[in-house]
Amino acid sequence: MTVHLPTTSDYEPRYLLAAQSGSLKESVDSLEALLKRCTVCPRDCMNDRTKDEIAACYSGSLPIVSSHTAHFGEEPFLSGTKGAGNIFFGNCNLRCVYCQNYQISQTWKEQRRNEVSHERLAEMMIELQGRGCHNIGFVSPTHFAPQMARAVLIAHKMGLRVPIVYNTNAYDSVEALSHLENVVDIYLPDLKYSSNEDGFTYSKVRSYRDVARSAIREMHRQAGSALIFGEDGLLKRGLVIRLLVLPNDLAGLEENLEWIASELGNDVCISLMAQYYPTNKAATDSRYILMSRRITESEWARAVSSVEKFGFTNGFVQEYESSSFYYRPDFSDSDTPFKDIRDFS
Image (cartoon, rainbow, N blue to C red; front, side, top):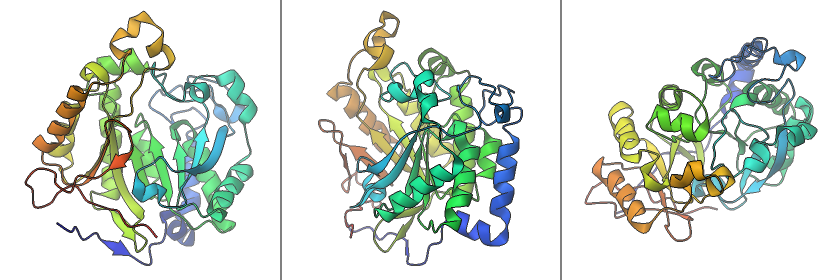
């Protein structure tokens, strides 16, 4: 079956439209106000980050950038042929014991050396756009949402024109997200657990499930379920929820899929991921023995069956062996199978 996708030849990123009305500056100011008694994320540390008072995320007033690069490992409608322009922030508001980027997310003393000005962050966006990247993807942006927005405001004056991707762990403040409505085009959240207890055990934050679900509801309010593509087949606007399958069903995958289907609809785009491997403390600490192996083929098959069970019709699954993304045009007997988005120019 051929799936016809909604496309547009004249999509303008949210920040460009907001800049024309003056609301982009208002959004940036509102986000920066959260730094005074920091409520940028749901940890609500209440420290004054404008004076570099360091709290749970070990971050102050300036953004910390570990690297910026054209990235080809995202979903194909983000990576395209020239890559997603990913900017990897240092530090994090979570402490996941299996974090695959723990060298930059949990080494705050080293990362402090990677502080950059807002102007330099804006220049990185322009550099990535100049290299042909299809979008600017901020990876782990939650604790730097105000700094990100300020840099976007600066970059648009320098000629930034590509969509903004917010690639997050979903432990986000609804208030902060509401101020990002004029900044972000594509939301790319993880939904890590269906249990608050597992969120505390494995990511060291309270109420992860409740916070993440509220955050994703807000993202869905802004972006809806429909995906908007350019004539090049690349995503310009939308919400894509990532679900990483964990060993021993520690993610509570079926419960999360049921929540998405019932709360947001089974037409929401999901991305089912098989790439888990034990690293960081999960690989060495006996307290996390349930996380100390890769997922099995049978665990993966059950995860895919759960997607079928709730009738999802839009998204990606990864190949079990290679963890590269592929599509399911034969997903069950539905007349609306997973969308097959293959053509990139």
